Length: 434
Image (cartoon, rainbow, N blue to C red; front, side, top):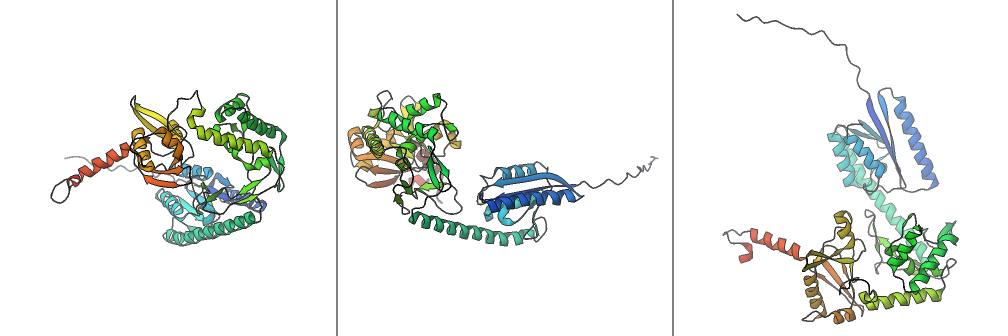
């Protein structure tokens, strides 16, 4: 018969419960002195609160200063906090209110639910909500909607105030290379103003924007802390600020949830105010540069004899990032035109799609009403082409007309055709055979 013995282990002494690891999050959207003080108060409050609780372990305070709460992408400290939570380093997150955590209801709920799945509690002090509780998410959904609507109302009030300031000719404090703000006035900054004058002189001497940028970079001259490029030179040569005038409402924000601004192409009124500040460039020089820019644009790629010229070089502009399209090759005989930023950095640079050169010529024939592509006709009629990056192209004619046409890339069209062939109807016949 088998012998069975009962083994009893000695009781282990009761282990002390692990302290909850607690962090706090604070944010203000402007650098107004009152809010800066509020931010310091929040930091001091949460540091004392966490360290005073014997059951809590202090895990730091994450602060986003001068950042909007409508988007998560621009808040580096918020993203770092979430990363630490996902790594299992935090158990509780404290924050002042829902609007401090996020004003976008969708982002807020997605983040809170993700943390709740990790058994991490987010506590909102003002609303007295703990998301780990059974009723926490319901209350959060309702109050977050109010926070988002409050953000919308605030944004509309601010935009209304900005428009009223523009109507009175009052400018906002935007950075302008060559100037600095002293109170509410633009004052010439002597060192960088010399650089601006050199840029205008060099362009009138026949130098290209790229060459001017390269020469400045070779001398270690920076543009707001970064190297110069042809886009920066282009912006300076077109900026009316250098003759002492100000054009207001150059850009606008689509809605309060969209952080990137769009160029104002007539969607909103613009206001041109003369003699708002001291000029760096004489008007006759600025006008001469403007004429030279127009002259070079008329010549197109033939203005650059050392550059390998193609009929579309410098003519196609990406609406997503503002860069030109450049010519690339899949094979020696198969040329495509792609956004320069996409070509160099992939989808991290720009998500726009390219277009095959032969397809681009066919599209141009269609828009120009000709049977065979003619470079001279193209240059005479078309100022430039803008693409939205999704296959929609707008031809901007020299007479002021603008015509839009959706023209998918050959690769995209080929994939779509394959997908259609794979679909069958109820009788088994392929969709493309119907």
